[in-house]
Image 1 (cartoon, rainbow, N blue to C red):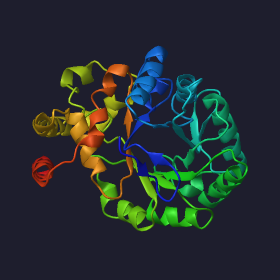
Image 2 (image 1 turned 180 degrees about the horizontal axis):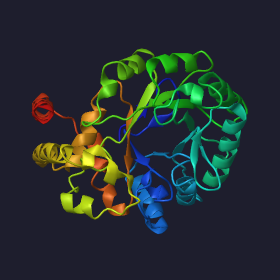
Image 3 (image 1 turned 90 degrees about the vertical axis):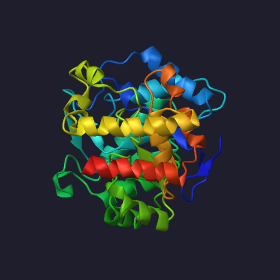
Image 4 (image 1 turned 60 degrees about the vertical axis):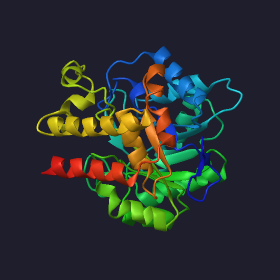
Length: 327
């Protein structure tokens, strides 16, 4: 599989990485419902067997559980994949999540993540959010500047290799870069979430900041396996039940888009999900895409996306459906 350089770092990553959000299970407010731990480990191992060489997780996914599963999956491997994780979201003994950018909090999170992951150094350590739930930055303890300075110290100590940010605006990235070099940005980007196209992605490209996008299949909506019946049967602790993309009036429009992706996929012997991922990867600013898997079987439906080069005709067809969808 062709490798891409993440920004100006020495990280040579596959275009697709293994996303570990869902394997955190349903133990927190953005959980995906119950998850079998053995299946989680098998899914990660299958992704690695397909040649993917990086895993993206976060401390808050499953309130530490996702990182523990990643650690279990990579333990004793002769060749370890790159491991990316995130900080800034912390929780109390009751599972209540809050946002903290203070230096001492960032350090505690890093130490806990290293222990759960079972590694000596985190390859890419990212600030998960600059603020939380639409609140102003001032509502959180600390600041972007304090948090990035803390990450710079952790890097100097060898506990992290590179500093990244997630969900940052260009202005916030500028502030971060005044404190330390930023290797990468992680924004949400898919056919159903294109807000970053006009300013965020061009800024990252201009600044030579690597970009790894999350939810390129819109949290499962664009996989081709999502149906009204499946959505109705989702457990109550699956956050997607309350997502606008999984409810009318968007649901019908989204399912029509999936059928367009399916038709294009037939030309490449690919799934709708692989076409959705390939569409995100075609943006010149995008280095890689994070693709979540919950079972080994799901890997075969996403791994081929890295080799698909969509034609101008394909993209125009998708864009026409998008225009019709927005009407």
